[in-house]
Each structure stands twice: as structure tokens, then as C-alpha cells.
Length: 484
Image 1 (cartoon, rainbow, N blue to C red):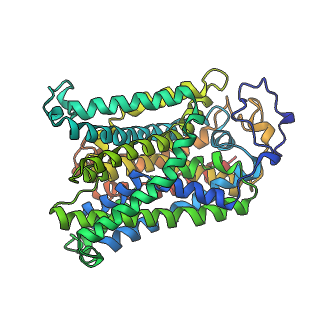
Image 2: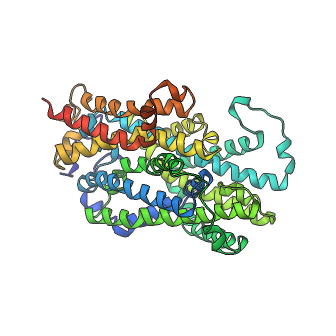
Image 3: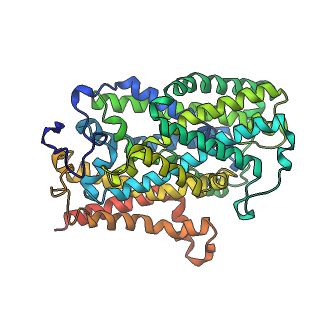
């Protein structure tokens, strides 16, 4: 049932943004979803994702295989969670009401929103650093500006001020509305693939062919050392799109059919991620040969080139495309999630401002400072939060409800999804149970406790955090819900 006629507009759970999309307005076909994934995959963090694996010690084929496998795995919950969106026209926060309750759905929505805030911060730092590179070319003395930020923040003055400027630009676009970004998205669709290919050709020429690049050996001296890096890296690859594997109904609610969303995602996600990652791997491997050191950040790499006008053009283009990506991918969804807290009080614009503030508080410059922080702290940590949510929602929809939902009750504070006071405590218990096994490993990763504080096997669970959380929460939820 997707007709909105039985949903009272006065319901505290209802807003025009959250209303089910009627069948006649669902116009996204297979190639729309393929194009969506190609566009979202072609971003600087995807490049950095691949190059960070090279920096961590993998050779080119090990890095590519890890990325392809991770994206193939996350494609499964992506398609499964997308089913309800395509069938009922509902968004992620509304879909979460079925398993977590009409009020309890705010918990997974906010957990996912906070992760998106982190991504917003990372992208904003990348855009701001691009502006800094331009400033540095024309005013080399910017590096001598006096330190104005506390030492614990680990922030140089000039890059930090450029970050703040770029942050305000993002907030201004939020103020103007999402429509103002459409032209930049078109620019990004043309520029980033061209820039990526240009970098690829540079790498092949500078390294005197693909041979030296592809022959660069792995830095691991034993299989034990490789597997110790591989599993958390794989979890990080899954974590990269773990947010979208939850909120994919925000997009599939516009699908013309289930076939459209399924085929579109299969065509778009693993191939485009793998291809762009391959470019990142080749270019990063080339930097080791050309410069004698591995440069995994493309913004830092562009700053190495001699032609200052070429660098300026590249940095400006990166800043503009990052702005477009940031608004489309990292503002829209969390803004809606924050609005879900109080649909009739928090607007999209207010939700966007909340996203921007949390994006600063997450200290994104520390996350991208090195590969270990990017993969082991950021990607793996939040996958341990989102894996359990995915497990609960998939079990609830496919195994317990057999893909049958009452759309009217999803918007009814006293309907079948209200449980007790709007919260399904069994889902909360399952969520916490899925998160707990990964807590010791996380505390070790962020150096709050030492590795010998817990048995080694408990700490090592963190390397598989998405898998552990997903299956533990799924099983616990199924058992609790079947028990009367």
C-alpha cells in the first residue's frame, strides 16, 4: 500500500519530505541508479581509499581485489534494504520504524546521520586544503603564519583557515537550497573522470609504463602480516558504503521497479568503485617510483607539480567537485535524519546546519592524516555501528514480516509499529548486543586501553566489526522477536 490518502497530514510522524512516493512519481530506471553510483564513486575519498591500501603495504592487485570484494559484499544489504523503498516508496527513517518503532527509529537514523557528518567533515577538509594549495602557490609565506589553534588540535593556521572558509561556502549552499548545486554536479560528472584519466596518463608516463608500477611488490613479509592487514581493510571497504546500505531506500523509493534498482546497483557500484580505485592504485604506486615516497592524497600530489597554473586549475576543480559531492551525498541524508527527530519543527536547512557543526567537531583532518586513522579508526569504527542496524532491518523485513508492511501504521503513533511508547526494546537490545563485542577492539585502536587489557581474540573481533555486528544483532533480534 503506497496511497497517502489514509495517512493524516496532522500526524506528528508525517511531513511532505517523509511521505511515501506515489507510483506515478517513481521514474528512476536501471541507468539512473547506475549513473548515481558512478557519480558517487568518482570522488576523492574513493581514490584515497585505494591509495591508502598501497600505503599500508599491499601491491596493486591485492588492493584492487580487496576493494572489489568489499563492494560486492556491501552490495547485498544495499539491494535487500532497497527492496522496501522500491515496493512502498518509503525513505530510510520511515522504513526503520517497522523494526525500531515509530520513536525508536530515531536511534538508527541519528547513528547514520553522525557518520554522514563525519564524511561531510572529511570532504570539507579536502576542499579547504585544495584552496590552501592555491594560496600557497601565490603566497608561499602562508606557512609562516603564527599558530593560532591549540596544539592538541594539530592544525596549521593557513590550512585551518582555508578549511573554515570552505565550510562557510558549504553552509551558504545549504542556505540557498540543494537546487543551487545542480550545475556543479554536472561539472563534476564531466571533470572528475577527465581529471582521473589525466592523472592515470601522467602516472604511466612518469613511471615509464605500467610495468614498473604493477611490478611494485607487497611490503608484507609473511602471510600472517598480510592477513592481519587484509581483514580490517576489507571491513573498511564495506564500511565505506555502510551508510548507503542503510539509507538506500531514500533513493530506491523513486524506482520504477525492483529490477531497476537491483540491476542499476549491480552495474553501477562494484565496477565504478573498482575502476576508480585502480586509477588511485596506479597513481599512488607511481609516486613511490617518481618521488621516492608514497603520496596517497591526490591534493598533496597535485601540489608537487611545477606548473603553478596547472596546480591552480586542478585545486579549484577539486574544490568545486568536492562541494557538489558534499552537498549531494553528505548533507541531504543527515539533514533529513535530523528532521526526522521532529518533522514539524526541524527543517532541512536546520538539519544541514547541524550536520556542518558536527562535521567540525569530528576533527576530520586527523582522520585523513594517515591511512591507519582513515581505515582502522574511521571506516572500521563506524561500520561496527551500522552493521548491526542493517542486520536488524533485513531480518525484520525479509524473515519476520515476509516483505509485508502497513504504510499507514508507519505514520501512526499508536499503530502496530508503536510497540511500547514508540520504541521496540528488542531491537535496541539486539543493537547494543551487536555493538558490544567490537568495543574492546575500538578502545585499543584509539589507544584508550592497551591490547593486553582483554584476551587477544576479543580485541581481534574489531577487525571484522561489520560482520560481527551484522550477524550478532540479526540473530539476537530474530530470537527475541520470535519469543513471545
